Length: 225
Ligand SMILES: C[S@@+](CC[C@H](N)C(=O)[O-])C[C@H]1O[C@@H](n2cnc3c(N)ncnc32)[C@H](O)[C@@H]1O
Image (cartoon, rainbow, N blue to C red; front, top):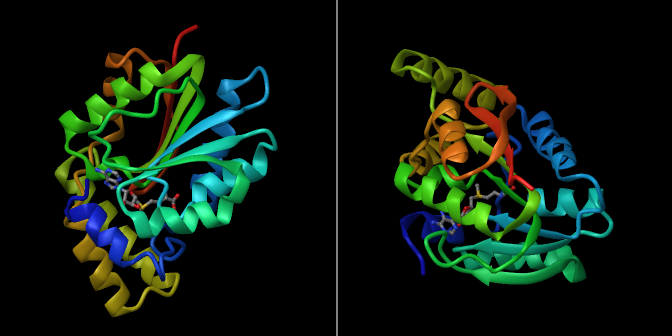
């Protein structure tokens, strides 16, 4: 099933990169990798990536965890095909489907996601977190590196201005930033605090923000057990 967001991503799969648009890229993705340590003890084997895109996060997880086999899930076939090609045999399965559809059964040692869940409205986010909890093994971890809403409208406006300034400093052109602004009209960001509450309500424990920089925050929680 496609929607306006996944259709938009499908069309931009060929030149897809986020390095200029996520000023804190290395720290942000690095924090997601560190948070997977919450899933210890034991090697990480079965990992589900929600909103794989072209596979930036999935490839980092696979590179960092030799035993990890990634289940890739995204509604944009052109994006996920690139990820599957990059991961090769390290991709255990590929699901071209909407987040609203039934998740792969698992159980997963970890579920990761980067810059994808903010495309859902709050009810759909809460539903996805609850269903993600249910396909994790007890003790498994959910790690979400996400674009978030500022805590107040004034702070959000400030974060938007910082974001544009930093993206331009990294080389985003007028055209590039205009295209990003158009894409961001599809965003349905929630504050980090609101999502911590959603994670707790879904049954997660050890829920926390592990990294935050401007509009980008990395949230994680663990299924009890
Ligand atoms: C910014 S990209 C992914 C980035 C990728 N995780 C990475 O680390 O580079 C967001 C992805 O979420 C997917 N997506 C957004 N909404 C979706 C939905 N409702 N169902 C499935 N996939 C969705 C898009 O198709 C897109 O590929």
